[in-house]
Each structure stands twice: as structure tokens, then as C-alpha cells.
Image (cartoon, rainbow, N blue to C red):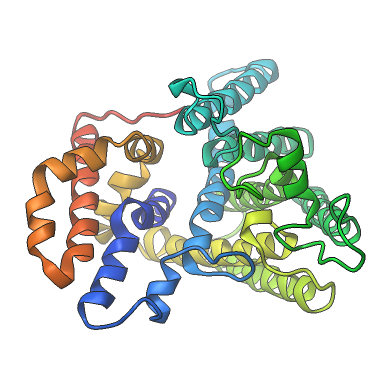
Length: 361
């Protein structure tokens, strides 16, 4: 239950929650420079804000869910080939959904190829396949560490071809990942210089998904009591934070979400592990569950609400029902916009919940 609640908490911020927090601050007289308002926005390049943790946490939780899904499929008698096929089909479906949100169905020559869902599919799929062939968590951790060290070496020692001598290999203009985006698919990336969900940063994202897989194995384990599992997760969060600081201050790798730098992966892994430890201890160990219901309604249909938002369904319904209220709200208009957006999306998901309809890929 803690997984659904935490996934719902994560999705809250992209289904109106960020606007609620920002709108509350602005309504109380704060301006755009307010620290809490800034946390509800992505940083332009280097650095880390809360809004930068939303996507990584979702990917991490996809990894956490995989051991439960794998055990369920094995219990139903599915063969390894059938499970492999299911993983690959899910990767393909997520990638195609990402292409649809990128505008491919508009038949324009500039549709976007990288996407949030595409990167989730590729990174989760790689982590799932690795976990099926590498059974020991110690070896999986070594694989994740090797990926992050290798990704650091590539970005640190290889600037974009044609970069001037001494150019910063982590900069927007001269990093190798963005250069590959601009060179290989110049008309199919989100920004002129880079794409924040580059397919060339998938290896780093795979390491985060693997951290989720290992956490899911821990939660399924029968050898430790629940409180001990929460403590192990929190200890892992501290270790990931220490590793992130090592990459930043010793190896000189900045935290850049747009590149999924190894330091960014480790920092967001620390956040994700700490949040999972807290939710698991509160919800599943202590049994304090009633407050999670609004979050679980969202978390149990997360792909549905994401696509309803991306296709404009939620926005159109909110505008039809509440545009007058938002205009009337004056200084509180952003708060009203965020609250009504979340309300519309939540009511759709609640209807699906009551009908026991959960849309999965």
C-alpha cells in the first residue's frame, strides 16, 4: 500500500500540486524568488529542486514494483520467455505512448522522439532484464555502480566534437549527450540544444531503476521485520547521498537533471530511498493508512492520469467547469487553477477506482 501512496504523492505535484504550493505562496504575498516557489520548478541546468525529483522517483518506484510483478507472473506459471516478451512489449508500448505525447500523431516533421514515458520504458526495461539474469543484489549494485562510473568517465573526459579547448564538458553547449541529440535527431528534441529525456542518458537512468529493483527485493524479503527494512532503506539513502557528494566534490561532476549525471542519479536515489523508507514505515509497518486514500487513488492509475493530462483532457474539463472561478480568484488564481486541475483529475480516477478499473501497460 505504501508504494501506491508514494506514487500518488509523487504524481500529485504534476497534476496540480506544484501550482497549489506556488499559488499559496504567491497569494500570501511572496514573489517568484520565494524558495518554495522555486522548488516547484525545474532548475535551468545545474542544481536540484524538488520538481526535479518527480520523474526519478516515479522511475525508482517502477523498479520497486518489478520484483512483485515478477513473482506474480512466476506464480501464475509464466515461462521466462513469456516474461521477457511481456517486458519488451511494455517497453515498446511506453515508448509509443511517449511518441504520441511528443506529437507524432500530428504528422509533423518535428515530432519529439525522446520522452518521459519512453525513458521510463527503456530504463525500467533494461533494469528488469538485468535483474532477471543477475539474481544477487550485491552484483546488481556493482552493475549500477559500474554504469554510473562509466557514465561519469564519458561525460568528464569527452566533450562534444568541435568544442573549444578547455570547454566545460558538462555545459549545455559542449556535453557529449546533447551533441548526440543535436547531431542524430536535430528536429526531434525538446530544446534547441538538448533534450532532458535523451535516449543517450538511459544508462544512467537504468542505474536508478536498478536501485528500485533492489529495494523491491528487500521489501519482499521475509528475513527481516518491517522496521528493520525501513532502517536498511534509510541507511541506503544516506549511502547514496554520500556517493552523490563524492561525485560532486571529488570527481567534479555537477548535478544536472537534463543530462542525468551520475551525481543527479545518486542524489535522487537518496531522496527516493528516504521517501520509500518513510512511507513504508508509516503505512505498512505502523499501519497508519486511512490518510493515504486520496493518494492511492492517484497512485493506482498513474499512467492514466499522466496521459489524461498530456492529451489535454483534464485541462479541457477544468477550463469548462472552473475557468470563471479561476479568473475570479485574483491573487489566488494559481492556487485555484492547481486545486481545480487536481480535483478534475482525481474525480476521474476515483470513478475508475469505484469501477475497479486500473489501466496498466
